[in-house]
Image 1 (cartoon, rainbow, N blue to C red):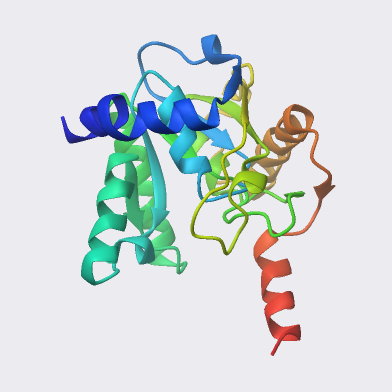
Image 2 (tube, rainbow, N blue to C red; image 1 turned 180 degrees about the vertical axis):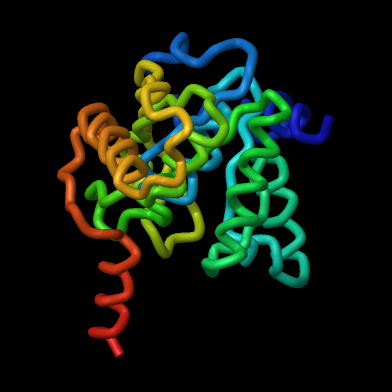
Length: 229
């Protein structure tokens, strides 16, 4: 109920009227049943606008750090993320990665829509980076449909490091469902996982027209951080 009120009465109408997002391919999202929306990641607001334009509820796996703030600001952030359908997960690796997988599989097992960022983190420079194979494992273990989604110009509306978005038009391109049933039962094969991930990233690059870089975005961020010390 809280999610519906925030999306349809309080936050949703205001943001949609201000940013006037254009949308292509909304009909590609099924009206019922579990599905994975795999999106590029340019800005914090990607997790806000995609759920707003999709008629069904979308659950995103978000860093647990976003939910641990204190005071009024921390409370407001948690309420906003909850309203946007985000679920807190630990991304530190190891058992945390397994827990993230299980959380995603639970959402899909309930017949819902799960939003995932294959790059694992926001792009540091608006380019598209190498995908993490966790998304492929989730696709193969769940057996559900995966749909590529390209967010357009969201990094211009809210660049990394800014707290208040700039009002400007953004876009969302929703691609055709991708079929990976030929790899059924092969979720444990790392070569298959990489193949599925690369095929998905190719489609994201085609939809977004971003320049593709075959390294992990997190590696680029770590290198930049070390050089700035």
